[in-house]
Image 1: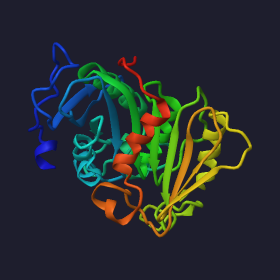
Image 2: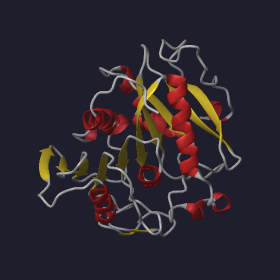
Image 3: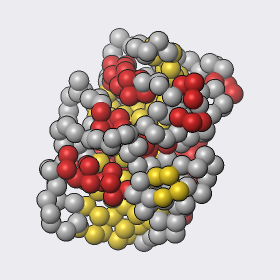
Image 4: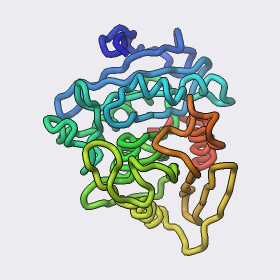
Length: 296
């Protein structure tokens, strides 16, 4: 982590043919200068082989770092073993010691000097730059906890997102709004999570946050995605039960019995039937269908 934050990683190169083979898989660092005058960064891993490539933009939880979340999810490692490897990007939240995302009413109190940061603008620019530099195709916004809140917000407000996969964090904008064209979304939540309770209420963690029930966020997505009143299809797999609604585009929820406030995949994959680090990208590809040309 110290080496990454000190800028010891090479910058993601600008290649004459970004759809060709990269000189190495990385990790690289990518810096972007945002419209609000900040210089932001992300750690980027590019899989072997030629493009076009899908892109996973994975947002860490509050106080965590991009490099720590990279180690937890192991997205970059699992990409290499996939049939269609993807680019893994781990952006860094704002703040020096307490890194958070401006997801709305949580968790600006951790870093009040930066609670007006335009994180949606940063992520939009990051995704656009990644597409240009890596021959990008579809972009999945992945996030955990405060990063999941940011994934929901980016998915609701941004244009550069093709699908949203959020784990253990609701939409926290005030008022909560999510309008626009239909967009695939999958939410995953542990039913034993007391830090961000699935049914809403006060958090067991520091800060005294009170969270809305996840149904409020899911209902916003159901309206946006033109879901019908038909009962959800229930798909139980071990500890995990997934529910898929009848909608214009895939709209799903997976709950995990006995699972607390942890990313359900990567280094924790042995404890759950759902390895979110790999399943998220497989789900996105199925939701969006195969495309052959880089988008946007």
